[in-house]
Each structure stands twice: as C-alpha cells, then as structure tokens.
Image (cartoon, rainbow, N blue to C red; front, top):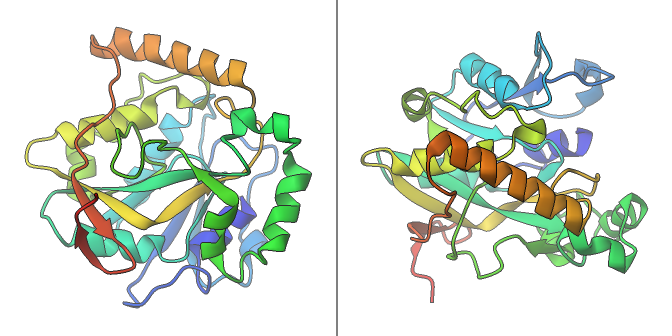
Amino acid sequence: MPRTICSLAAPYQHNRSRERREIIIVDNGSARVPEPGDFTGLDAEIRIIRQPAATASPVAAINTGLAAACAPLIGVWIDGARLASPSLVDACLAAAQLHPRPVVATLNYQLGPALQFNSARYDYDQRREDQMLAHIDWPSDGYRLFEIAVPELRTGPAGPMLESNALFLPRLLWDELGGYDPAFVEPGGGLANADAFLRACALDGTQLIRVLGEGTFHQFHGGLSTSTPESAIRTLQQGSRAYLRRRGNPVRPIREPGWLFDARAGCLVDYP
C-alpha cells in the first residue's frame, strides 16, 4: 500500500495542469488501518475511510469511495497492490477531455519475468521483486517499471480487453452505472471489476479510450488470481460461473479497440 500511494502522489505522479486531486483510501478490514502519518512527505490530499462492515469482496468499499468522491472525474483502483506509471493520472485526465461520455481504461502489467501465477518457476517472490525495484532505482524513474514487467494483454494493447485496474469515468457516468454491483460478494470481488468495465462500455453513447504509454503494475503478494496457475484457473472459473448466473450470458472481453490515446504524444493514434 505505501508504494501504491507513493505512485499516485506528487512528486512521483506528475501534475502538469496543477489541478486539485484527492486520493481516497477505503480500508476494508486491514489488521492495521492506514493512518495519515503513514504518508508523510507525499504531496497529496489523502482521505482515509474505514469501511464500517468489512467484507471479503472489495465492492462495498469501492462504492463507499465512489460515494465520498467529489471530483468530476473519478478513477477506481480495485487492487491496492498496483503501482502507477508517472503520468497515468495526467493521461487519463487528458483522454477524458476527448469525448463527452468517456470510459478511460489503462492497461494492466505484472512485475516479474512472467505473469505472476507462473513466476514461481523463475524463483520469483517478494524478495526478488524488491531487488528488481531497487535495481531500476524505483521510484526515481517510474517508467523503468516497463523494463521489469510483462503486459496482461498478450495480444497487444489493442487486443481483447476484459478489465482495467485503473478505470476512470466522469462522476455522472459512475452515477448512471450505479457503481460496482454489490451482488459480486466473492473474495476479491470475483469478476466485479470486469463487470463494471463491460457495463460502462455498454452504456448508451459511451466511448472506450485506452491509454497507451502508461499503466498499472501488479506487485507480488500471492493474490487469488496471481499466486499459482491452479489458483488463477480456479478463481477465473468460479468468477465466470457467478457472472453467468447474474448476467445470463458468459463473460466476454471487449474486442473493439475503441480509441487509442498515446499518453506520450498526447493524441489519438492508430494501432498497426
């Protein structure tokens, strides 16, 4: 968590337009609740909310955070183990200006030599990850995260997309969507994140905008979908069955690439 918040706050996270930003942390039953003193030295407005009734699913906590947020553009970060690249927030703000009903999706990466459910074969663990982060001198240059990570979209950034760890929608679209569906009560939320992304893309008149050149980077912590191949397969199968029961159709990724926003160039691009 401290690394994640560091990656979302200045000076690491760029803020070229100098607009006001707020980071809302919703604690969902941690053994040790985060405190403001944990984040001293960061240039950020940080608000910590304790979820009154902690649950195995993060959905209720996410909706608590959405209700508390007051910005016109709100990004949800379902996985607190993910680091941001240095201009991710700037890029999402810029991309959101391109359409009146934008669904701004960043790309997911995982730290290590392979997707983390396969990393054990490379003797990859928390200690090795700490060494890799030290080797690239993180957080001095956050873009070097790309050197020590692999993309979750194996067919390229314009390939079929099921979810985004950092999903940005205008306040009005979050309200129209109704936030995350509280029916997703599985540990970790099951496919709640995918469901929110797919429902947002299905709203009338919305435009999917994928952000290229920035991303979120999953840290190793033995999560449900990243610990072992068996755990990853079991979690996906259970989540898919629950999704089918709730939606009446199998979960399917978005195959249309939508608009591709090159964060470095600051414009829309065609992907070969």
